[in-house]
Amino acid sequence: MTMRADKETLNNDLKITGSIFAYPYFLFPNVEIDEEGLANKIWGYICPPLEFGLLSPKDSPLINPLSEKAQSLSELGCLRILVCMGKKDDIIPLEIGVRFVEGVKESGWEGEVVYLEVDGGHSFQMHQPEYDEAKRMMKCYADFIHR
Image (cartoon, rainbow, N blue to C red):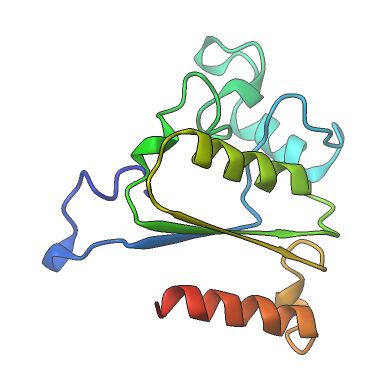
């Protein structure tokens, strides 16, 4: 949706000015990920290796926005993005978020990129909202949304 946001008309001329990527479910080649882990297994069911004539499902632009087959990140249809990653995430490694942010910056996209790293696991704030890191994360989200 973020890629198409400035190309399609939304009801009442609504504009998407920012996007939050919380623990983004991307897979990149050459990023250490548990081959038997949840992220890899789920994607294997969604996109079998031979789908779209790909040798690896990780080459699909549906899961890898840095793929050569993916639309350029310079065409993100918003003015700013927030990418949040958990240091203890056992599903999506930190390197995924870091590489995505680098890819956005290297694409020539002219928007603002905010990167937030929290000391928690995947979606920890849902189960531990009283945790200081969860409060810091929610404050960052709120500040991003209300700017």
